[in-house]
Length: 443
Image (cartoon, rainbow, N blue to C red):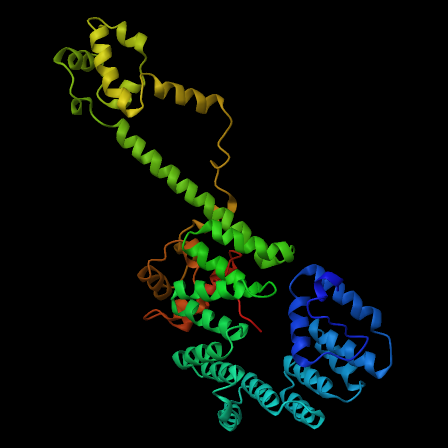
């Protein structure tokens, strides 16, 4: 790690006393806050990987867990000196590779070396939940109920268990309770934002994600979910700021890179829509009949004989051509100019614009990109069953672009939309190299 990045926590895994569990968790956040930090930390672990003394193995094992190399972490930690950190981090690593029973055993062992009993119980609850052993998780939570007025983590773990059981409103209440006890509990704040996002309360979701984004190291999942919410509400500048923040620290992040392209495509589509609207308004103006304007009988008759019936016809002729016509004089010319001038128009303007389009450079946005063309294709191109097609039409989803902005949960939450139709649609999208929107989740 670069010294400037680590001074805040004064963390050193390999010399001095091993940091506490809480400090190690902060170190993990810092390591993953940027690609530079991650690369530096990976190099540090590799430098110490082959060392065989017990203390170095302990630090290396913890480092390997932070890097996501869980099986290697378990092997290193098995040969490390016995202590709280050894058994807690062995439990973490085993849990991530779904060896849940073994993880529980190691969490229990940590209490013999001074680990906080409540913290260990809550880690076991998380393990039972991930193993879908809800009965034991619920039982252990009840034994911790005495701490509900002081422990934010208690409410967070209760909320996570309730989410797994489909009790979403109760879960949100517990996340709020956790934040009342600890306003900086990032995981509770993220789950609250996530639940608001899924339930369609986008304004609240944006507010919660923003709170996460401004606190501590770059929280990639929160920023990317903000990107999608901002893009859905056509706040493209804010979406760009969020994705740029991710790419600033994680320049090779694949999803962020894709989101960046998607935002630029959306901006172009909006530009094209606005351009089309301007074109439509202009067409309407050009098709305005000359009879709608107050002209003298002499001028009106002259224009009629020249077969100038609309404002567009008038703008496609020059002053010289009008004056060359029999019985058309300066008085009639001034009368026509008095109609055009207030509208910012003049005789021959359409001829000039046509000439510029012919000789000028082509509009860079004129040709729709392949990606835009794909997203603009109708959902009928997916060749779905009648049931799935009718379900999409009932939701007002007409194009592939509209479809891929939906999540599984959003589609399944609609009346008469079942899992069979969802799976059919997802399979059809794969054939086009597309997929439904996926919300980023924290760990």
